[in-house]
Image (cartoon, rainbow, N blue to C red; front, side):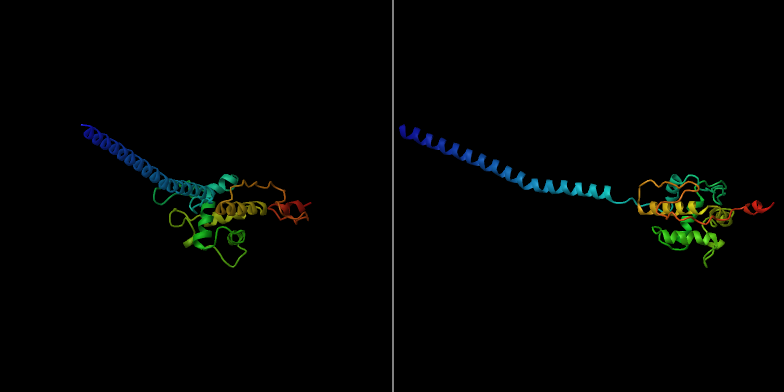
Length: 215
């Protein structure tokens, strides 16, 4: 009888030790699994953070078709010239603007880069008639979608701008396409743009100046 009790006690102790051993192994395996997954979670979190920072720091890309809106936001006094009738709808297309056509002429017709001041000055010079290039009605923006070609009126509108206004337009166009979000202050009439010397400028002739010479 005593041998049976001793055998049962030994079996019970062995069973308890085995249970504790199995439980300990299961717990250690679970901790190892969690530890192995933790670096993956950290790397995933870090990758998401880096992606968010990259998206926030990357300059916003402006489509040429939408850039005119930002130009008019900064220079609201520019001529709009958006009263042309669409061939497709038979109604006035308010989104077909002077600046929009200027941008399409610059980028698509002439193939000039939109992020350099010199290239924008070349395009304005085309409108002013001071370059060997000239505007061609058949390829001018708007000719294919508007009932009347806006080229001549656009040329007149650009020529009506004074030098200060043209400089401001060029700067804003460059700012829009280079992602410069700093507000651009438009110089008022008679004010010298920033960065220019203080030397006196030769006044440009204006319409009606000849009348001032009559006695």
